[in-house]
Amino acid sequence: MRYIMRYIMLFAVVFSLVGGRMDSHRATGVSAQTTPVGHWPTALALDQRTGHAFVLNSGNNTVSVINARTGALMHTAVVGAFPGASVQSGYTRAIAVNGRGGRVFIGTYGRNSGGGVTTLDAATGQVVGVTIVAASPSGMLVDEQSNRLFVSSAAVVATNLVSVLDATSGALLHTVTFDQGVRLVAVAAHGARVIAASEAAVNLLDPRTGALLHTVGAPALRGHLSSIVVNNRAGRIFVASWGGASDAPLNRISMLDAMSGALLASVPTLLPQDITINERLNRVYATVSAYSSRGQVSVLDATSGRLIGATTVGRAPGQVVADGSTGHAFVVNGQDGTVSMLDGHSGKLLTTIMLRPALTQSIIDMEGTLSHLIAIDEQAGRVLVGNPSPYRIPHQPCPGSCPAPEPVVTGPGSVSVLDAATGRVLRTVTVGRVPLALTIDQSAGRGVVLNADAIGPRPSRGSVSTFDVAP
Image 1 (cartoon, rainbow, N blue to C red):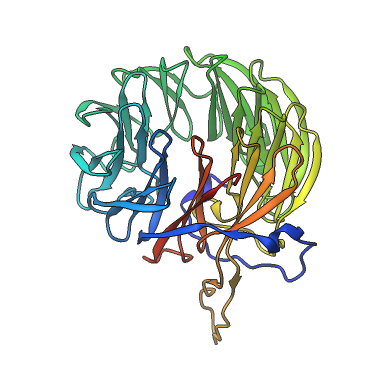
Image 2: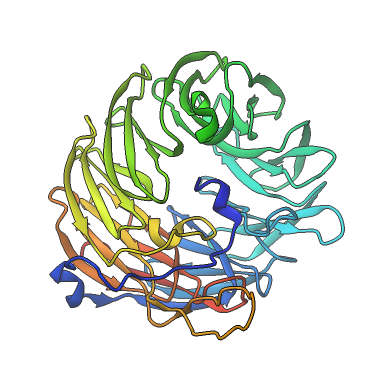
C-alpha cells in the first residue's frame, strides 16, 4: 500500500524501453523558472494569501522562502536541527501555514529528547519565535477558526502526544496524551472537531482545548486506517481501512458522523489506498490497486456513503483530483505513465492520456511523488501532472550478493498541462530534476514544483520551479 511506503526511500526505478506513442505536445514544451534552495529538501508548503512557498531543507537546517509569483528567493531562515523530520521516520512534512494569522510553523527535531516548533512570519520568512514541545513533531495542522495549531508527536515510545499551540504567537496551551500513535488529519464539522487518527482508531478532539471527545475504533472501524477525508457540507468523515489479501472483509471505506463519530455506512472495497473528495460534485473517490495489476477507482456519494460504481484504470493509480466545473476526474497511473479521465459523477472512464513510457518495475519512494504528482486549477480549467526525471541504472559488477545500484538521474523532470474539459495535453513544462511535490498558487495561477535533484537520502541541493498555469 502507498501509505505504508511513505517513509521508504526509492530503491529501484527503471524506465521501459518499449513505451507507447508519446503525445506530440511533449516535445514542444517550455522551461519553468527554477530557483536553487537548500540541501536535501523534504517538503513544500504554500501560503495562498501571499503566494510565498516555504521549503524545508533538512540537509542544512533551513527554510527557503520563495515568491511563487516571481520565482525569486526572498529569504533563508535557520530553524533548528533537521527541519521537518521526526525521530521515527525522518521524512514527515512537519509544516503548517496559518494564512489568516500570517504565520508558518516548522517542526524541528530534538536529537536527544524533546523537540520544537519554529514560528515564521509568512510575509517575510523571518523567525518570530521558538516553542519547546515534549517530543519531536511528526505532523501539524492549523485550525484557522479556533486559531489553534495542533502538533502530533507520534514518535514517542511510551506516550503519544498532541500539543495545542496558539496559531499566532506559537505559545503552548495544552498537551494531550494518547495510548496510540497519532497523525493529524483534518478539521471537521466547520471547525467543531479536529481529527487525530492512529492506525486503528479515529479520535475527535475539541479544537479549543485539544480535549478528547470521542474515539472510534473496533468494532466500528477494523483493520489498518490508511486515509481520511472530510465532507464539511454534510458533516461526514470517510475512513479507508484495509486488512490485506488475507483478510479481505477488513478492506472497506467507512462513513462517520463528524460530530459524534457514529458509524453511518460501510462499503466493502478492494485494497483502498487513497481517498479524496470533491464537495462540489458530492463525490468521494477511492483508488485501489496492487502494483502488479491494473487498479480501480471507486466512486461514493459523499452524503449517503452509497457506492456508485468502480472503474478499472491503469497500474498503480494515485490520488484522484476532480474539476467541479467540467465534472471530470483525473488519476495518474504511476506505473503506466498515463492519466485516466473519468466522469466525475459516475466514475465512467472517458479517455486514457499517455504522457511517458511505462515503468518495468514497481515504484517505491518516499510518497509515491515521483509518479503520482497531480494538481488541478479549476479557475483556469487546467490539470497539472508531474513527470519524473529520466534515469539510467549503472552497471555494477558484483561477484556475490550486493545491493542494487541507485538509479542515476540523467535529465530534468517535467509537468504536463492538460485541458480539464477535453484531457488534451496543451504543453509540457520542463522543471528541475526529480520533482518531489507539486502545488498551485490559485490566486495567481502559478504552478509550483519542489525538485529534490537526486534520488535517495543524499544532501543534494534542491530547487523550486514556478510557471504560469495558463499563459
